[in-house]
Image (cartoon, rainbow, N blue to C red; front, side, top):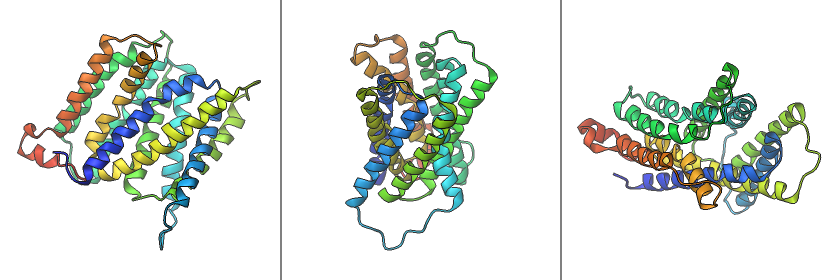
Amino acid sequence: MVSGPALTGVSAGVFTVALWGSLPVLRSLAELPPMLVAVIAMACAAALSAVMACFQAVPAKQPAPGWRDQVAGVGGLVGALYFYFLALESGNPARITLITYTWPLGFVLICDRLAGRGLRVRTLLGSAVAFGGLAPLILADGQGIATPAGAYAAGLASGASWIVFSLFLRQAGPLSARSYRSLFAQAGLIALVLHLAFETAPAATTSRDWLTAALIGIGPYGLAFMAWGYALRRGPASLLGVLTYMVPVVAAVLLVALGWSSPSTELFIAAAAITLGALFSQGPWLGRRGAGDGRMSRE
């Protein structure tokens, strides 16, 4: 059952999902190249972290992260964004999104392995139920665009990058606001290089474009990434992995609330399946051993 510090971890995970769910709506309002949006967003996320750092006590001793941690954190974050946008350039958006969303299952399986556990039925069952219910919702937005193997590979690379970034946040321990400031600033610098190298600067922009990109940096990128790091340290990986499948559902609900889309059977099925998947992932009725494994503590 949910108790103790794990409750705050799960709450942070729900908060993260809500912010990530707002990203498709915000992204549609910013008519800028993807990597330029990432540059602006990461700069604002770094600025937000800098402001937060002013109110955070400086630790007596905070060792500098090693190069492996730097690659995992910065590389995982940038890779998740870059490969996803790269895949969208040549593939069906619905299929690309679906293939990218295989990452939560990979993440929880790797966490189990790192914790010294083997393959757990409830982990697979919960993720399979959630993913199966999500698939019709995502594929309902398909546009009939052919998807080459390279686009699928880029989608998988984006998912793998999400796994690397999440593992970094889970294993790195508590990160200060100053650490996040450095992480966001470095990610923004790499995104700027990618923008200059592979994207064409827009001929004209509006204040709405820049404001929306800034809001992405404050919410879905800045606060959400920091909350996700907290959730991964406090909550169970299996439940958090299933909760991430709620992101497209939250996005779809927002579109319905704004009148940009209509309610659908697929949306109801996805919400019900993800809820059921979350129950399976933590359900004590799956056996005495399953109940023990499902304790709400860091796994």
